[in-house]
Structures are given as C-alpha cells and as structure tokens.
Length: 267
Image (cartoon, rainbow, N blue to C red; front, side, top):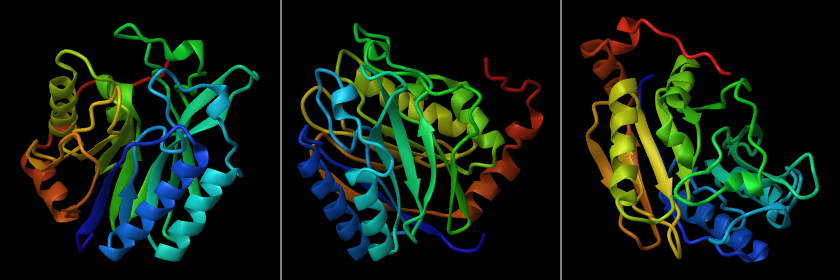
C-alpha cells in the first residue's frame, strides 16, 4: 500500500423513474472520471427511489438495464463504482435492497444484500423486502491498495456488521444510504459514522441520498474519527483522498482490533 485512493461521493437525489435514475448514475460516473477518481460511491436505491417505500415494482435483475449501464460506464471511465440497487426477491411481491460493487474494468465484483431491514421509526422495509443472509460472505472491493467493505443505511446502527467487514480485511467501510429524516436523525447518522470509524480504526464513506424524506449530509470519516468531508442537503459530487498509510499508522498507534476479546458470529 503506497499511494492514496481518490474517492468520489455521489450525493444525488434519485428519481422514481428508472430511465432517469440510470442516466443520472451514468452521468455521475462520467463526472467522477473527470476528477480522476478511483472509486465513486452512489447512495442506496440509486436505481430508483420512492420515499413512500421501494418494493418489487422497482426491482431489476443484475443483468438488467441499470447494472449493465453502470458496468459499461465504469469500464469506459476506468472508475470503480459502488451503488445501491433493488433486485427481485424470491417471491413476486418482494424485492431485495442490495449494493453492487463494480471494478474499474466493469466487472461485477460482488453484491451485498441488506441484512438489517429498516423496521424502525414507524417504517417497515420487511413489508416489501427480503433480508439478505446474515452469514453471506462479506463484500469487499479492492481499489488501489485499500479494501472497501460494503454495508448499507440501517446496517450502520449495528456495530457487528462493520466489525465483520473489518474481520474480512476492510480498511474502509462504505455505507450507501437513504437515511430517513426525523428528529435527531441527521445527528445520529453522523455520530454512528464516526463511531464505526473509531471503534474499527477504519475510514468510513457514508453517502446519503438527498431529496424528499431523506437526510443527505454525506460524511467521510478518517480511521481516527476525524471528519474529512461533510456535505449538506443539496446534490453534490465531492472527492476525498484516503491514504492506506494513514490507516496503518492509526492501527499501529491504537491496536484495538488486536486487543479485542470477542468475535462476531452471524445468527
């Protein structure tokens, strides 16, 4: 690990229309490439979003139009991409909240299916969605000497999800989200991102969707808990440099991962 990795935060408002969402994603990839980034992170539900709830009507398969377009755009731009999508479920009336990771050649590296459905604060994702398997292999994407572990939105409230990714070798935790608005929610979003960084001595790239019903306020946190980038509630494309040497130095100075006495076991 010798050089920094340039990460772009694609804080966008995702439309319900799938064609428009696809065009927005492709355009954001092209804009990120103009900034010579190595990795672009788009929010949860980047393939199409409705603040009233996302379900089977929004689902597309992995070989559908959105993922196919993202893979082609990533290959053209030579930019790795992490993006939230909605996949078909095992039943016609259910979908899967997922995140895809695509490398700079356009290869689909893997898919994370959201384990913790958002059945909280008066909302119930489980009425429309199926959870991913808790014991599925962690999704980790290698970019420029850093390993990016993928989770999404509500998972941020569960330290076990982050620790499992770190156990799989992650240096950076990537959190695409459509974090719902509400009293104290923006403050909790930031506090949880900082906490996950500190307790795992890992950088955190938390990318929030903006628009009706969601918080925005994307934040990138260094492995020591320092905020490196913070956005507001408007659409934005911003970049930050993540240095593998910084992660290594923080972990050497604070070897809490080596000192811990418990392990994470899925159930």
